[in-house]
Image (cartoon, rainbow, N blue to C red):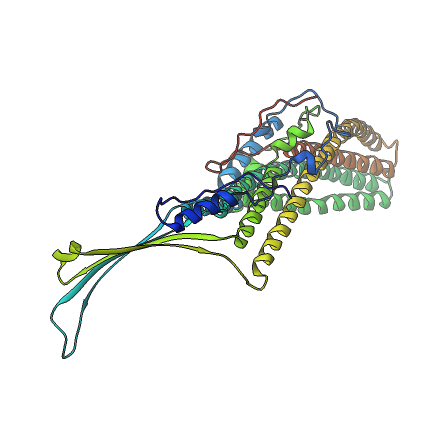
Length: 486
C-alpha cells in the first residue's frame, strides 16, 4: 500500500521525560497512514475523442445554455428554480452542515478549557458560618502524533467539497428538468392547438356530409364516418389539456411555487416549440469530466474516505495527551487568589486488546473507500455515456425534424386538395378521411420531433456539465472555461 506524506506534529514542553518520550515517538513514527489518492487516468481509461458524437461549430454558453432556445419562459423558469427550488434549499443546508462539521473537526487541534466556580457552606451542629468560595479551570490537549486530527480535518474538508459539488450537480439537473419540462409543455400546447384546429375543420366536414346526404349526393355512411372522426379528435383534447396541466404543475413544484401560475403563463405567452442549434461544439472527454460536478463530487468523497482509512489506522498507534488543572479556594472573595494550586499531567496510551474492534473499523473504512472508488469510476462512465448518447440524439432528431417538416407540408397540401375535391363531389369521403388523418398524424409527429430535438440539446448541454454555478464557501475551484474542441 502506498501512503501519503507525513502529517501532524508533536507538542513541545522542553521539560520532563514525558515530553522527550513523546518527541521521540513523533520523530520516529511520523508517517502518513492514509492511502494515496489515485489519478483519474490510473483507475479509468478516458478516450481522447468521442466515438459517436460528432462535434459541430456552434459553441454554447454552458452556464446559461437554455438561452439558446430563444424562449423567455424557459429562462424565467430556470432562474426561478435556481432561487426557489426546495431540493436546492435542502442541498444548501447539507453544505452548511458540512461546513460546520469541518469547523468542529478543526477545533480538535486546540486545547479544551473548562472553568468552574462555586460556593459552599457547611450545615449542622459543628458547622461554621464561613462560606468557602472556589474557582478552577482544567485544560486538555491531544498531541497529533500520527495525523489523526489532521486526517479527520482532511476528511471533513473532502466532505465539504463533496457537498458543494453535489449542490452544483443538483442545480445542473434541476435546470435541465425545468428546461425540458417547459419544452414538453410547449409541445403539448402545440398539439392541443392542432387538435382544436382539426376539430374545427372536421366540424365543417361533418356539416358538408350531412348536406350532401340530405341532397342525395352522399349516403349515410359518409355522415357516420365524419361523425366518428370528429368525435375521436374531440376526445383527444381533454387528455392533452390534462397532460399540459400536469406538466405545468410539475414545473411549479420545480420552481418552488404553488400550481396555477405556470399554467397561466404558458397560456398567456404561447410560442412554438423552441428550435435549438444542432451543430454543437462538444468539449473533449477530459474537459467534460473536469466540468461535471457529479464526477468531482465522487472524487471528493473518495478523497475523504481515504483519509478516514488513515484515521482508523491511528487507533492502533499510541495516543498522547497533555492535561492540567488550576484552582483556588478561600473563605472570602477577596482572598481567592492568595493561594493558587495546579498540576500538569502528560499521558501516553496504547491499545493492547479490544477484541478486534479497531481492526474492524479499519476494514470498514477500507471497504467504504473501495465503494467510493467504484462510484467515482461509475460517474466517469456515466458522464461519457450521456454525452455520446445526447450527441447522437441531437443529430438524429434534427434529421427527423427535417423529414417530418417535408411530410407535414405534403400532407397539408394533400388535405386542402382533398377537401376541395370532396366538396365538388370528385372523391368520396373515405379518401378525405384518410388524407386528413395523415395530416393530423404528420403535424403531431413533427411537434413531437421538435420537442425531442430541443430536449436532446438540453440533455447534451447538461451532459457536458452545463447549468451549475460554484457554491460559495465550499472550497471549490472555478469551473474550467476551456473552449470546446472540435
